[in-house]
Image (cartoon, rainbow, N blue to C red; front, side, top):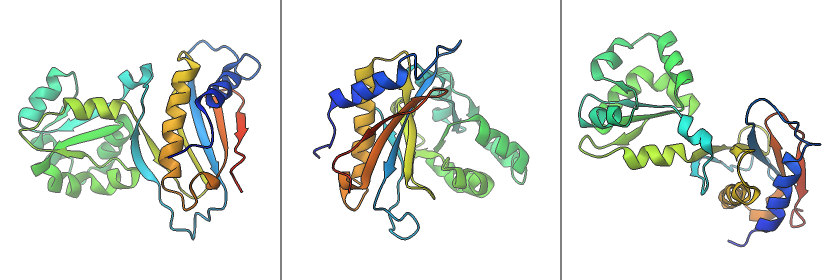
Length: 225
C-alpha cells in the first residue's frame, strides 16, 4: 500500500512533538502517542470496525513492563515461570468463579492473558464477562506448545481501536527513542488503519503526535477529502 506521507515527514512530526517548547522535560520518560483523526467515516453507521493487536517494528523499553498472566496447570505454566511470568492454575481459576471483584483486579493488573486451549471454556465461564468487554480474552495456546513467541509478540504490540469517535489512538514508544524509530511505528499504525477504511488514505484527515504530558504536533494529509 502506498502511504500518503513519507518516513521523513513522520520523523519531522515526531521531532516537533518532542522538542522543548512542546514537551517540557519531566522527571520520568514520557510515552509518545499517535492519533489518526478520520474524515468521511460515520462511526455509527459505516460499519467500519477496528479492534486488533498490531505488532510494532520498533518496540520501546515499556515493552519489557507489559504484564502477562498465563492460565495453565501443565507445561505452559512451567515455561511461563521459567520466563518470569505469573501463572494461574486451574484450581485457582475455579476458585475465582463468581468473585467479580478479584477478576476485575486481575483484569486491571494484567495487559494480556494466555491460556492453554483446553482451559478456554472454563476461562470463558469464569472470566469472560469481565475480560471480554476489555478485549482481554486470553490467547489460546496448545498444551504442548510454546508461549515464548506469543509473549514476545504481545510485548511488541499495541491495540488499535475505533469506538464512538472517528479517532484511532495508541502509544508508539517513548521520548528516549529515535525519531525515525517512532516514525516507523507510526507508518505501521497508519498502514493498518488505512487497510480497514472504505477509502483508505482519503479517510485519514490528520496525524497527531504528542508526549504523554506534551502539546500535540499535527500533520494534515493532503489526500484527505
